[in-house]
Image (tube, rainbow over all chains, first blue to last red; front, side, top):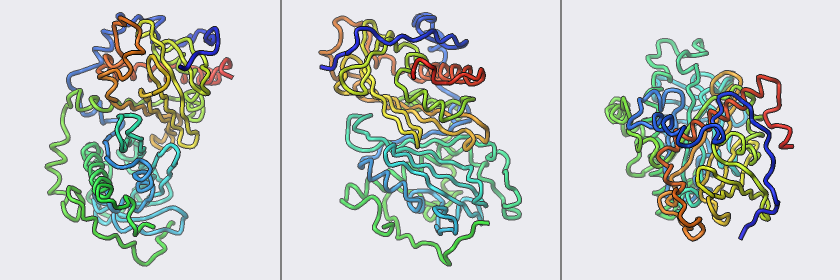
Length: 219
Length: 219
């Protein structure tokens, strides 16, 4: 049995910051009307997906293998809807591919991954590779810890960067391209959930069939 | 200007997994009705917060300082609603405190943090410190990268572990305790958002006043 080793807890000075809700100042029954009012039967799309777009899913495959696959930029050629034809650039770790959702669109990607935290961040941009402002923040979590069963949980967040509304580099865009990536912001939640289901299907299919999740051709 | 260095993109074998939606098989205009149907004016509470509970917010303070503060377990004594009276236990890095939301409740916490990814995971449990199944997954992101302005973005996800529904260690609970932590799952989104606003208020107040975000007493 784990026991406290000190006779007295640490002393914490008064926080003294306006607008902070702590139990000393707001008893639970006093705060509950506010909390219940914030808890709704339904939430508007913009409140949930306007500023941040997060999707989550469970994958029946080991977290380190899912992480290893995701952290290879070329995996995007498999599980995304429209990123294809990856080529290395003359900048280390920077890849360029086609984003077939935008007619004649080149997309640049640099992946930053951390095996201990199992974070995988895709730093991307349409048209130019100097300022990678489209950032896909992903994380693979051990489902044994958070759901008490083997497998992975994948968290995926995008933030509504102002360039989704106004292209910061219009001079790099192909003339007369009919779409801009930010036109799709409203359907990112649905689109990313579909792609996450792609990732889930691929990982689960390979794991269930005794295949490596990261395919041979990536090694 | 960054240029592709290969004459031809990498070859990707056919993915060949059922249930995967890729542009080769589903043209955008073909998939759009599905995507639009998944995109609603409103979403029910359980669809958004039933299995995963994620809250996000922007904080006008530097990400490394916010991370440094969060990654110290004792910060929970300031920005959470009800965790107070932290004491070290005889297990390294494991703290015990009161969770005043549960009458007479002790809560155990071990923090796993990664300064490169800026992830901060609080592994917690009510009543016992052997199996820390209540996991608060947090991450501090540089707002300059994702929002094109200085500051931090904090992501916070909890997963609906089965013990929220059925206490896995009922023998460790105080007799006749009127509440269980899982009773609050439905209001986690609102409660965690309130606590995230606490964190925001504390960090912004200190940063705006030239104070260290991690207070002196924690050093």
